[in-house]
Every structure is written in structure tokens, then in C-alpha cells.
Amino acid sequence: MRDYRVHRYVNAFCPTCHEEDPDRPLADVRRLSGWLAVRDDRVWLERGCPEHGLQRTMYDESAEILTYLEQWTAPTKVHEPDLSGNFKPVPSAYEDGLPEMQTQHTCILLEDLTDHCNLRCPTCFAESSPAASAIAPLAEVLASVDARLARENDRIDVLMLSGGEPTLYPWLEQLLEHLVARPVVRILLNSNGLRIAQDDALVATLKKHRERVEVYLQYDGESAEASAYHRGADIRRFKERALARLSEAGVFTTLTMTAALGVNDGEIGAVIRRAMETPYVGGVTIQPVFGSGRSAGIDPHDRLTHTGVLARLAPQTDGEVTWKDLTALPCSHPHCCSVGYLLKDDSGSWNSLTKLVGHDKLKDFLDLNPDLIANRIADSGINQKLKDSVKQSLLDLLSEQSSLSHPSIGSLWKDICTGCDLGIGTLTKLATAALPGQHKRLRRFLGERVKRITVKP
Image 1 (cartoon, rainbow, N blue to C red):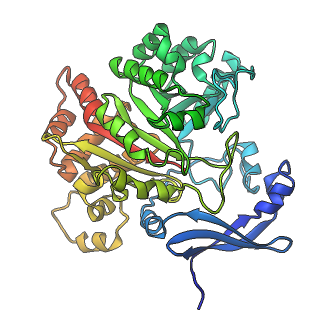
Image 2 (cartoon, rainbow, N blue to C red; image 1 turned 90 degrees about the vertical axis):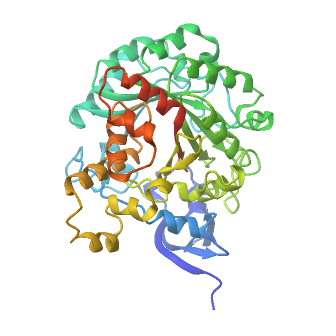
Image 3 (tube, helix red, strand yellow; image 1 turned 120 degrees about the vertical axis):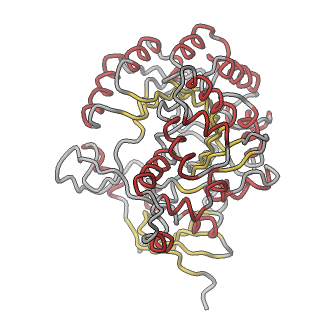
């Protein structure tokens, strides 16, 4: 008998072929038939190359968690291809915009403003540095945004400003003024926090636009070792100062953690705790190191993975957060991203949305549980309009487009509170109220008592 079972059949590139000529277009690299094999509960990507033989790399750390994530998929929004008939292979297909076989519209538009940075981090996916000097002209950035607005029916849900270090962009204040005047729902600013920690004028600008602007703050943990490994020096004092200033200004912030095996994978729980304790920190995004850009490299047979991050949640939070508190992002490939919400009830206890609603009921609302749906078709007590409303609200909440700073967040929670009976009286009261001044109260409530955890490999 074989010592493994086939989880699913796949096509994959030969890594050795790619390494022999890394500048060769990926479309020209040999694509191989293979499978995901489960061996000792780990998932291995195995494929056979006529030239290099069996190629084996670790795909994920937990077959159990990967199987759980695969339950959470939902239909995605229809998109129009930018070029009709574009069936080129990926990634060359994207040279002409979104191709025919694209399964998702533009959830997040990423605009790189500069490759200049005030750090030269040993871990940097963009390979930015102080020596880099490319700066995108303001007019070109706005033209790019306008072109995407035209394609997306005059609305962009999320625009992420990145780089380099985007707070060093010379026209950042003018750019934000232009963007808030356009139908861009949320603007995310990626930052290492150094300038935020020291520049009062920048913090004032972010506070001015806090209804539309959110900060993704680079935050790798609370140890000097993690800071030195990823950032080249112990710069924790700048992170703490930036975080305190953003919280005081009421600017929603996501702590963005780059995690590496044996470096800071033991600090995931501490970062989540920091988010739970800090007002206006809307949550945490955890990204395992991958083999792109500048890094110390990864061992393809032993590395931190998506399910590995999820498996570390319970041991590092004393069971307060577990992998079952998250689901796969329903609109994405289930292996690509997981997301979950934590809510502090009126007694001060934290509970997850999945725990409050229940996995089966959540699947029912998302139309992911055929057996439950079939059993309830004849139930005349179901209000289909309410069910549809809750489903759409849950899909919007469990998407990359959503965050606690989203202007429609109150209406989303209203539908979910009403339809799911979360048992959180304060949230229900605030979300369903339309009295003057309630928006400010709801915003503070969300900033203190609702947290979003995302894992994005």
C-alpha cells in the first residue's frame, strides 16, 4: 500500500526548470501533471518532470484544516473581460487586463506609488530600499485609478496604496484629496510606520480622512529578534509610537504580520492579543513568508503555511481563538485566504462569528449546505427576503473588500444581527438604530469590540 492518499489532482510548474532560467516567461516553463498527496497529515505537492524526475514540495501543514477550508466557496460576481477572447495562459493573460477565465472582479486595486523606502528590510516582497528612487507622477496614478473606475462601473471598493513606503510619496496629501473626491469606497495605506510615528502633519491628514482611509501597519511581533530578522534592526519603538498615534486619532488600523518559521511564528497569538487590546485596531493580517523579492529564503520542505498559521492560533491564545473561528474567503480559492471575526459581548468575553452563528447555519445562509437547505425548503417560516439579505451581507463581510472602516459596515451588521440573533445586544442596538450621532458610537464600538483576522499566504 502507498504511504499517502491523493487529496486532488493538479497541474503545476517544475521548480527546477524555472530555477535553471528564472528570467524565462512563466508561460514557457514546463507545466506538469501531479497531485496533492496527504502524508502524515501534511499535504505535499508532487509532480513528475521528464527532465528532472519527481518534484516534491510541502504544500500545507495540515490536511485536516485544508479540507475544512474547502467547504467554504460561493459564487463570485460576474466580470467583463478587458479584451474579448483573451484565453491566453496565466500569467501572460493579465498583460491585457482581466482575461475571459478570470473568476473575480477587481476586489482590491493596488497602486504602487514609489519604490523608495526609508528601510532596507531583509524581508521585502517589493525589494524596496532607500537607494530606489522611482516615483509615479500624480497624474499617472489618477489616470490609472480613473481607468479602473471606468471598467468597474464607476466604483472601486478598495484601493491600496503601496510601494516602497507610500507615506514618502511627495504628493500623498494631494492624492488623498483627489481619491476621496472619487467613488473609491476605502483607501488602504500600507506603511512601515516610521513616518507616522514622527510626523504630526501626516497623522493629521490621516485623521482628516479617517472615514475613508485605513492604515495597514507593518507589525511583525513584539520581540527584538523578529524586528531584527525582518526589518534589519530593532525598530519596535517606532511601531509602538505609530500604533498609539493612529489609535488616538481614531484611524482604523490593521496589523500586518510577516511570519517565518522559527523566527516569529510563536508570536502570532501576541499580535492578535495586541489587536484585541488596542482601540481602532480593526484586526490582523498574517502573511507567511514566501519565495519572492528579498528574503532569507524558505525551505520548500519545511516552512510556515496557511494552515500552519491557523493551527497555531489556539495554542498561542489559550484557546480563545481557534482555526474553526475562521473560514476560507468564500469568493476566493479556499486555499488562498481565510478570514474570521471576533466580537466582544457585553460581558467582555470574545466570541467568533462562526461560533455565534454556528458553522451549519452560516453555511445555510451562504447556500453552502445543500442538506440543510433541502430540509428547510418547505419551512414557510423562512423569510426569503431576509435570508437573501443576510446571505449578501455575510458574503460582503467575508470578503477582501470589507473592513471595520467600510461605510456600509453598520448595515451589514444590522442584517446579520437581525437574521442570526448573535446575542450581542449593544451591537444589535447600534447597528439597527438610525438616530443622529449613532454612527460615531457604532464606529467606536467597532473599533473596540470587533476584530477581523485574515491569513493570506
